[in-house]
Amino acid sequence: MPSAVRFPAPGKYRELERKACAIRQDVIRMLTAAGSGHPGGSLSAVEILTALYFQVLRVDPRQPDDPERDRFILSKGHACPALYATLAERGFFPLSWLEDLRRLGSPLQGHPDMRKVPGVEMSTGSLGQGLSVGVGMALAGRLRESGYRVYVLLGDGECQEGQVWEAAMAAAHYRLRNLVAIVDRNGLQIDGPTEEVLALEPLADKWKAFGWSVITVNGHDFGELLSAFESVGYARRPTAIIARTVKGKGVSFMENQVDWHGKAPNREQGEQALKELQERGEATWR
View 1 (cartoon, rainbow, N blue to C red):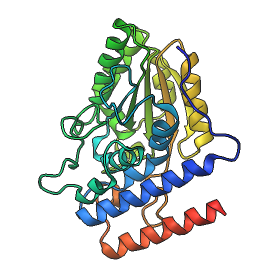
View 2: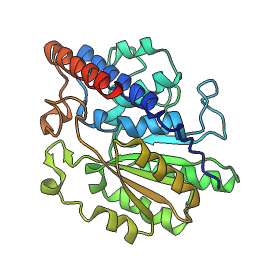
View 3: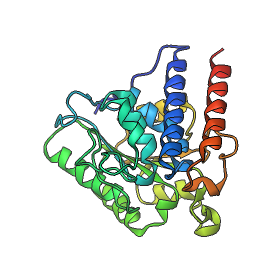
View 4: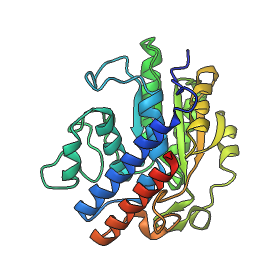
């Protein structure tokens, strides 16, 4: 199965960095306006989502139900502000929808709904279930002799769920080389550091022991992420990408702070966060 990754030309990663910065700002605006939501795990996953939707996934916003499209499942559904902002930037729905996050009647609720949001492949919220659905989608693709791949983004704390490992065992048993699990390894969950709540390490060795090909990358480095996604095309087994990230990435007072797992910024904090993101972006692009 050939690789579908599109590498930017040398020196052209700035466009991806600009998109990631725009998505982070959208996340902050959405959560500040809504007054609730999950900034930490949304901000940590931005480069992963940007790489997938702008360089890796074979998707067409004009045909969100194309049977040959790649599938993406956000298993850690509470990070949906980042997914919504990415889908809007990719053109699946108008950017104006982002203004109504969590409002009554809005399609963009606190967890993604596949029946209401174009581009959402699975309604998620209860942790631990996304990889099982990904296994089913990958099996269906193989039975249909389709060339699509299935990508599942999991939170690291989510990997404490037993259902994740049942799915991992099944994927290896059926040699689902068209299935990719990406673990957003930011090291924090709602109750504290993952290694204090319920230790996960050695996480890469656990995936290997279940029969997966495993790659560990800096989850904020587009070069490392795209190289990892490209290598998926040569794997004979399902692939797990352990993406080491920073919770709350990009906003100084949110980075590595467990308090920002599920707390929205107030107006003053939101303005400060937006100012920081704009300044960091401009400094990077000079």
